[in-house]
Image (tube, rainbow, N blue to C red; front, side, top):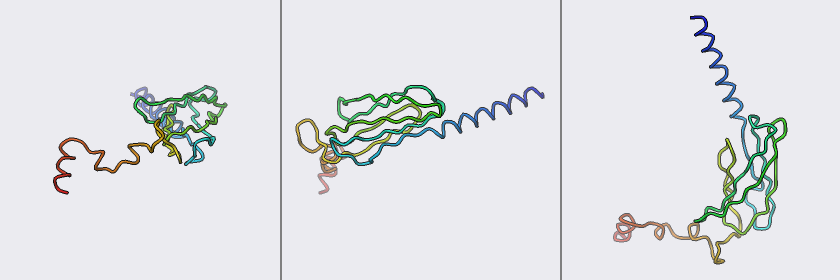
Length: 140
């Protein structure tokens, strides 16, 4: 019985310790609203990955998406940073291990044909398809 209780206490302690380490993981991208041609700084922290190199995947949300990979070498405390030159996109989503996605809107970005991004500039009624769109148009 004593061993069972000890194992339970040790298991609980390890779970709390793991949660505390994971809670310290994070990523920031500054500035928060860059323009094409600006350089953003990506700061990443995750003590559980100290001393390792991680990959931050940045995509434009297109179909198919354009994806760029930026490598960050973490120090002994699990902290690191890198820079990235902002292209003429409408927004960029940053994804890295163990942290929430960070999305920044890019001022002056455009799609491939030089116009405004269709999803960000179209009225909601033009984005609706199927029965909902038909019903909404009849009521107008």
